[in-house]
Length: 385
Ligand code: SIN
Ligand code: CO
Image (cartoon, rainbow, N blue to C red; front, side, top):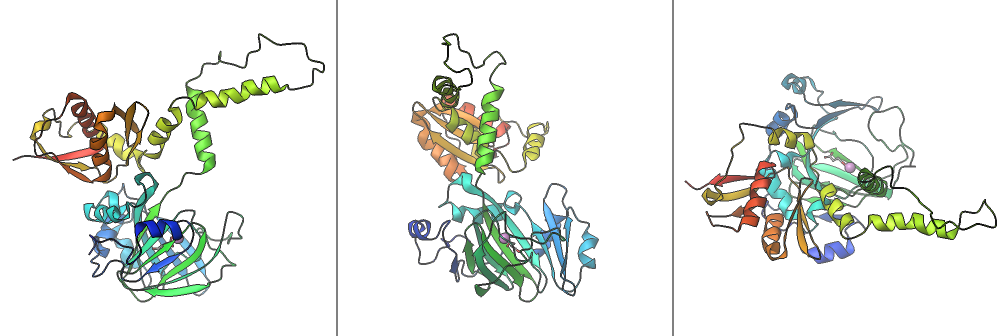
């Protein structure tokens, strides 16, 4: 059952206050009677697709060597694998499977822009990716078979790691706690917690609901790049009111206040908010959107009245910022400013993967935005018969 609040007895508020980004949590039977929406065969099929990101990780148990191969794979590759100690990992399965996307809806107690994707792994007995840490929060749902999870310690960029293998293996990692997860069980891990999960028997499938958090360095670099792109080379430090200094070596407080003002000017109005909304909703695979937008065979709609159901593209990221004068809707890196009176509609688009229109008519402003969202590939639709 995936249409189910997954935190058991714990409310979303309590989870956010006590566990989110703070400490691990094991939830037995988070999804009772869990039927994996994507089967092992479907997963292998996806790993053979050109546009899908996938990896095979194979461990040699005799010498503890590790191998990493990137997809797409030939179907025959799966027939050549050893009996044990390998795992196939497929990224962003929710972008390709509406059923997998539906599972992600259960995690919207975290804002849309913090959600990354659903990664699914399939492992043969003892298969796993080795002891490592991630910089992101994750919910690990056991979908089929059993996996033993060992966790412990906090690690970072300076933690020793094996230099001789193509995957992150923490050589000094030590388990502090361990559990065997059965289908429907779920483990939450905050960033940087060391962990090692390996299949306990065959047919082990784990679904990882992954989150994202931009690096501070990335925010600062990207935003200042964005600001710089709008400036001409004539816009410079200028000092027509320069006064004679006692010592020509001094960088004066007055000069520095002018430099500081450049940063303050860059934050004026809602410039940062509008940039951030675009930046954080950029698609995970922008090239797939480019292909959608340039597909001349894509259905065109000019008649919104004939639309029954609108669907968010499974690979789309929707968010909004309620500004001083306008509500700014962001979808896949594009900003759609709307009058404040449309806040309800924007909220509906951001919170539901599908919206029933039943042919109802909208004002010209909403019509314009809906048409743009459709032609930019962020929404698709079903028509009335
Ligand atoms: C997995 O093996 O399914 C999860 C990998 C991880 O620990 O990040
Ligand atoms: Co991990």
